[in-house]
Image (tube, rainbow, N blue to C red; front, side):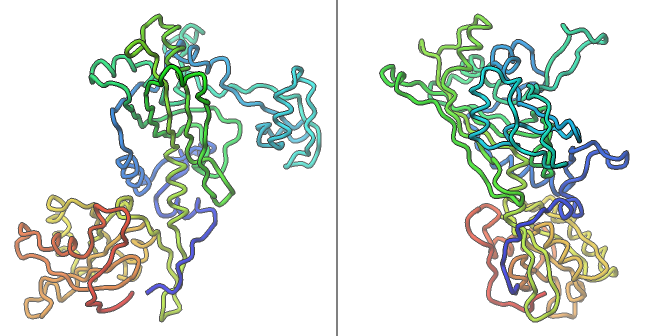
Amino acid sequence: MPESNSVIHKDLTNYLKHYGFFFPNAEIYGGLAKAWDLGPYGAELKRKLKNLCPHNVGCDSQIITHPQILAASGHLKNFHDWLVECRQCRKRYRLDNLISSEQFSVFLSQKDKNNYQVKKNCPRCGKNDFHPPRQFNLLLTTNLEITEDKENVAYLRPETCQGIFTNFALIQRSTHRQLPFGVGQIGKSFRNEITLHHGIFRTREFEQMELEFFFALPKEELPHYAKKTQDLYFNYHFGWGELCSNSHRGNYDLSQHSQHSQKDLRVNGTIPEVIEVSFGVERLMLAILQDTYHEEKVAGSQTERTVLRLPPLLAPFFVAIIPLSQQLRNTAYQLYLDLLPEVSFSLTYEEAPNIGKAYRRQDAIGTIYCLTVDFDTADPNSSHYNTLTCRHRDSMEQIRISRSEGIGDDKITKSLSEITIMNANWENEPTLPPQTISNN
């Protein structure tokens, strides 16, 4: 059994890179600054996380965005941050990140922003010598023609929701939905951020999970309904960071698109109001990985282990098949191939110089169970013939479970189902029957 169960509050970038969750983009060419690719385990975690996102109605709109969409939504005019640059070291900062929220509010209230004096020294060089604040547009552009004329410019979408708004009338008519109903979309968005930091927390390319919930308000309520945003924050290793935004967008977006396109987006004579829930997928992944990362001493030994206590619905793999020895690799791999089409849970195959290293590696990527093929498994004279050692990630307890002579009768699947229902249940911890044989 593990001796401790403490969450470690530290930067996991190197750990996640080492174990194949994230890789620096184009690393063999020196890397593209602050850009990340998903490794095999990060991709699997992300896929499972997105599968948990409930949608009333789905949508999948284009990344390349028509300029008139962003003109109507206000992005072309207003989607910017305020940038300041140190004259001494040329380090650039978002002004709202450099000064206090009170000071930034004072700045926004000033009519002549060119003469604003930053009352803080540069964190890099310690000097107080900044260029005047200027607007930094966050939109990323692309060109749709061979020649780079301004009339050919389009944009990479800064948020997924605009595709939902512009398709709203078509979605509503094709699905015959009446208010209220929600439309969800998961997809890539792009923002030309001034400052990129903390690994995958803030990048130019990221993925959003957004739900736009459309509804109508009684007319007498409209003047009294307060439009507002409420953000949810998570305490990351670098401090508190935004995890989710919940916004009452009113009917601004649909009204703007109706006006600019000259199309009727009303339902029963009313422009619907919108409540939006927006998650950054990578930020949610980082929060989950940080929250499930543990370092602990193994009871009864001097060894330590690192473990990701991911819920089974999110663990990259539910079960790993491992041969105890190289002599058993063919038997173990055949079991893996036999099980692949038979089971509903995620499955992987692992080989390592010794079983302890294989267990530690699977712990480190969050695999719930390890099934070990040992010499008793293949020995007809053994009392444990056609059985496997089943090791549980969190308790490290091990039991024997039976495998079938003909894989079709699914005894292994049944045994695992008896051990845990966690493959379909988020809340309960996996538990093993009491016939423990060892800990490792």
